[in-house]
Image 1 (cartoon, rainbow, N blue to C red):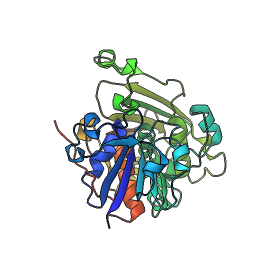
Image 2: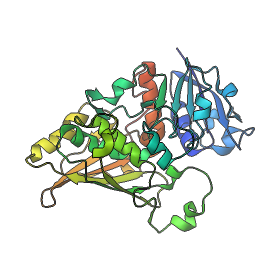
Image 3: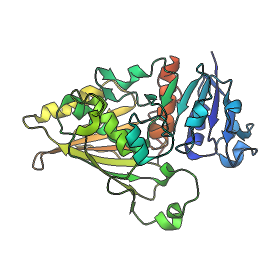
Image 4: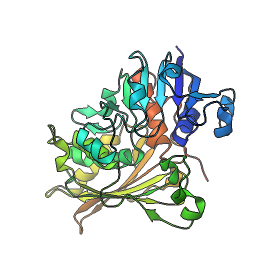
Length: 355
């Protein structure tokens, strides 16, 4: 069976990356692409690297245009998906690459985003450990999927094994991330101009203000065997600082948390090894080896390096992902494959692009 697909926000970075992956998917036909201000123009004007899709023109992003497809992927700015998803048929598989359906807490949505709150959907990070198994199990047969925030999924994949195994204390997490500007989207912004970021590293959303913080706390609470109930994430405390660096793609996240007293080094490493041993797209590197962002460009992989810092009493995990692939588009396509009953890795690769 061939599934018809519509992709909204197709002129942006996330939409373009979703299209790049789907263009080589043997089980889908990209039938419709939509945009807002760019509607009416050829897709190739905005995504000149997508030569195989040069025949497509951008249509307006409306429920009527998106209706009638087997799969609808929304790559829209935060706050714009919810009104559209309410009008889409339950028969379609709908994947939202924005934040509108990620959060379970109304209070968190109001604090970090604002505007209308929409129901949470199945979270599109298949490898993430959750109580009783993996998030993958919640994606099988799903008709509504919320693709993750790229920073949020990177930190969550880094630390969830330790939280699930009870070997780290999630009440004192510190994460510092080097991130590429493509994660901020394609809109023109002064702070993202080449003259502003080349030769410089620029922190932003400092002091607990970044929108991905509640998403991380929610994911880690879901992994914790003891964090249950309406306020499950109250036991998850994180200091989160992203730093914009001059690379177009990539996240290098360095996250640490205290070691639970009495836990051995072997128990700590086993928590991550056991969690990801059978995973294709999340890999724990050998002891003493740490990833580079250059190793994941273009790949749907998260590479993790783990260090046990006994003098500081902390575990440190360094994670590298391509924010546009594993962080966004790859997670969406991987989750789509699971939901449709297709081989999970279809149209996805573990091989990066070098140099």
